[in-house]
Image 1: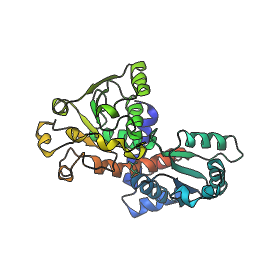
Image 2 (image 1 turned 30 degrees about the vertical axis):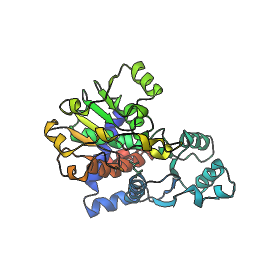
Image 3 (image 1 turned 90 degrees about the horizontal axis):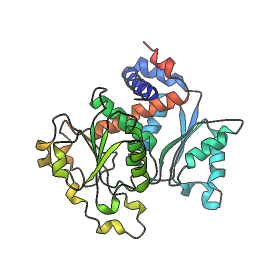
Image 4 (image 1 turned 135 degrees about the vertical axis):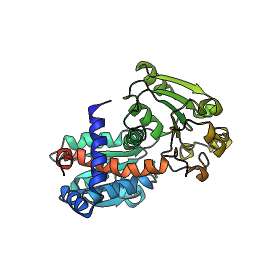
Length: 312
Ligand code: CP
């Protein structure tokens, strides 16, 4: 596992521990109180937006937000680049969710070349990538398996073709030795060619399956996603039957006692709420981990790791 990942896990654990007391929270809130951030979310979000906003508050960063490009001067014909340049003028960090592929990287590149380089964090880019989700997913597995993530069988279930969380998860978990992926999806939403090539090229073991029952006793992790029908061209998802892969209460007795059920959320019917109370259902803890991992990411970006880790 990459040392930078271990450092982020350690930092997230430390921030979470420090934040338990008022003194600790007061300390954290001094760390970046000289910084301002803008949260630009041009696609809908509940938890990524809220966790980033709260992570900023925990570290003392003041935030402003733009929760739709419909509120920006893009509706008056301004280019996205000019909108981002304006955010760059006023703040010290941009956290952005946008449908356009690589726009966060493009903005970061643009600002790195300027007199005022500022960090740009990708909080989800269309169906392409969701890197901070992958970090919080890896952090959740690190906690669930007490640091022993290697050699696990990871079942990835749902919309593998268009799920940005899935794509970033595959890239992320490839950092762990001996990981094996099993992909379960309706055939229309299966593994895209570029991910297949990535896995092949990096000698990462994977298989595709159509049978949830056979996987129940075998998988260590069940990573569910919903169908990403916001990317439908002509409501084609309506004719896709995903129900045979949905998790049901009767499946639980066949699963390993130490299995971990994850979902980046929001969910629909793929995991019913009656499973939430099972000790293997980690998705609500996964959501909470997002707050601490995002606080760690921000602190790391501003090179405050050492200061925080040395806090007694
Ligand atoms: N997991 C995730 O990205 O959720 P939101 O869309 O609610 O931010």
